[in-house]
Length: 357
Image 1 (cartoon, one colour):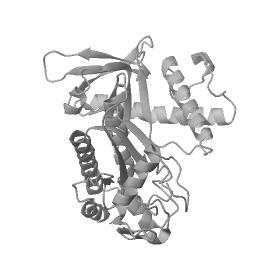
Image 2 (cartoon, helix red, strand yellow):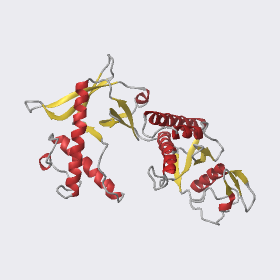
Image 3 (cartoon, one colour):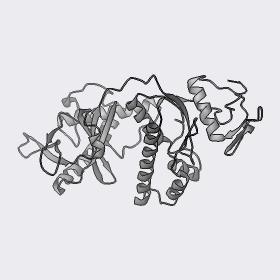
Image 4 (tube, helix red, strand yellow):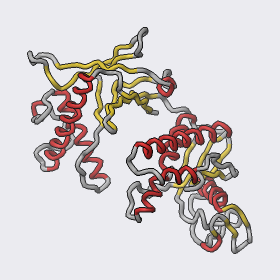
């Protein structure tokens, strides 16, 4: 298991911030240059090139050039795998391995540690790289990883003009649980979730999404309310796992739900407010940490199938109510879907139209 703890870099002086500004500006230019060089076959893809084979335009430090070339190769390889074109890079993460930083721990004083970053710039003598010491304060989230192994790399990010540093941790995942309950979960826009045991999220997300819709996208208030939404999702997932002895969770695989789809503007805005991705990521994380088997199944017909008789009819679903036109079974539509999701994941992986399960 790999996790990260994010720390805002706000305690360094202005001089160090200026160096970070320069680093990100030059790094982005160099990354774009290497991407273009690979695409125009001036450089090969994914080769173990020496620093002498990498002609720097803005950054000339050998280790930094190799890191940037590696990141450029990864970006191109990822795009080719997804059959996508490489878009102009705007935002970047800078991975620092043990060659480019070290840590100085503090037992006393205001800060818990200093991250010493070796910049790709040289002193006037050109014999030594310039370094900056960035102070770090640990917080509640980072302390939960005190028993984990700290990896020998960190990640620098720039978000809305602010700098952040991600400390990365690793731990062996526990064995899968063999005892406990199995539940299906149906996720929705108005209800964050409902389980096959009829447990539902306690937060009124419908009202929350209404509040989000009133905020201007990209504004400070919009970003703040999304943070509040994410906190509520974390609380809901933690509470669900805490209150139940679970060995298996089955959810729908809604991977085709895109952040930016080709739907109408109003529907795109609705999709942005929806919490599917955040809920799924949090669920995946906590299941991995606690040895819970998380399964994803196709969502086909889960809202149209009767969880009692197995017949599938589109007419059986009527808004929030499900009434089977074959056997008359009546149930909350989302609860019926959650039962079908569990059935598909645990008992029968395939559901086809007009086929009883």
